[in-house]
Amino acid sequence: MVESEVKKIKKGDKMKWRWVIGAFTTILLAIALASRSTPKIPFKSGQFSKSCHCPQDKHRYSGIVEDCCCDYETVDHLNEEVLHPLLQDLVKTPFFRYFKVKLWCNCPFWPDDGMCRLRDCSVCECPENEFPELFKKPYHHGLPSDDLKCQEGKPQAAVDHTLDSKAFRGWTETDNPWTYDDETDNSEMTYVNLQLNPERYTGYTGPSARRIWDAVYSENCPKYPAEELCQEEKILYKLISGLHSSISIHIASDYLLDEATNLWGHNLDLMYNQVLRYPNRVQNLYFTFLFVLRAVTKAADYLEQAEYDTGNPTEDLKTHSLMRQLLYNPKLQAACPLPFDEAKLWKGQRGPELKQKIQAQFKNISALMDCVGCEKCRLWGKLQVLGLGTALKILFSVNGEDHSHQTLELQRNEVIALINLLNRLSESIKFVHEMGAAAEKLNEGTVTSTRLNSLVQQAWGSIVKT
Image (tube, rainbow, N blue to C red; front, side):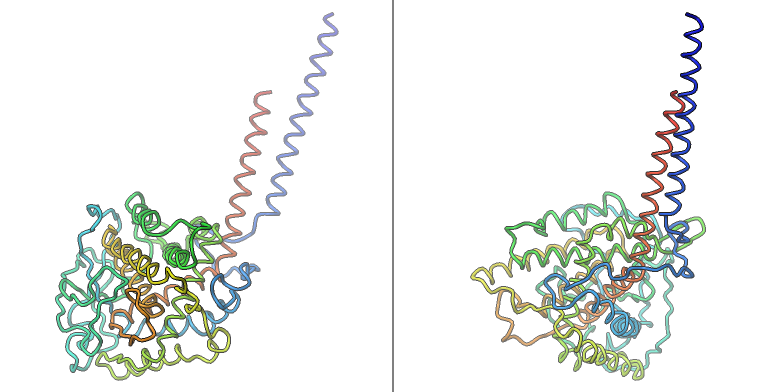
């Protein structure tokens, strides 16, 4: 009896050790497989090493961009070869780098909480002797192109609500019916040098930031996709979604990786989780880019003849030359002559009524920009929403009327916002094209590591229990 029990114990010990050895072998095998499947990309704290030359599938998205007239490959090629370089030069000129904005307004929907923890939330306002005198007085000359006295990031750089009753003389004084702000009201306006106030991570996160986007989508943007929605209603959602994607990409591309050392770089994990893991968000980014590009090309005659005077003849000639290159680029006209076809919209009996409804919804969205609790975020929100509203104004009729019998009239600020928005979208397209594959591979490695850790913990837990 005793001898039989001893044999059973020995047999149990052998089985236990066989299981332990088997489990240990399984763990080693899993580690080996994970090491083969995990990409060897030198990332650290969300930073991407520019020396890495890993093969990337840059054309994950292919075919025609939905509701547009160009394909993804053409957009990427044109943006890299033509549009991005031109836009980068344009927004640095004196005319396009100064934006007039009303930053301090009461939120029409709820009390402002001002939830922002970094000094990078603050906007650096331009001293009056920096921005072009012609923006105030039409016949004063002599702005140095590099006279930049305002430095970004200073805590004392508070907005002083510069009054500017003579701004934009020589341009049409007209209010944009698609936006909430009265563009003809110059009270409490200030000029901001956009080059010194880049759109990037500011620390503005949490419930306050989420409340803005929740209000945009839940109250003003129809749910999508939905079979009962018509084409026009879907377009409003796609424009806002594409703008949202672009903003998220700019935050991820210029992110504070280490606050203690003030280290900035790419946060590819954030870009993946906020944008890339949702294919429709990338698609909507491309759609919004082509939509705005179509507005710019449709207004080519107006924009070519516009006055880009800042008092610096050399810079002003350069600005006009760059605009002509953008508007009449032969490569763009050959490869993508009609980025978006607006003529197919508003054709039904409900056309005028639907147009007024969507215009009111977008106007309400623009009003939400006054509720953004971060000054720099409010600046770029207002600029890009005005740019999108300008694109809508160019492509569609105003107040439900037939646009074909109306003469296009744009304010200086509308043109500045339109071109800066197109540049923002261009930068986002370029960043996704160049870094998207790397961000996805990085995420795949994270997922593999997470699964491996789970497997090891389960196996080790079973060993301990035995």
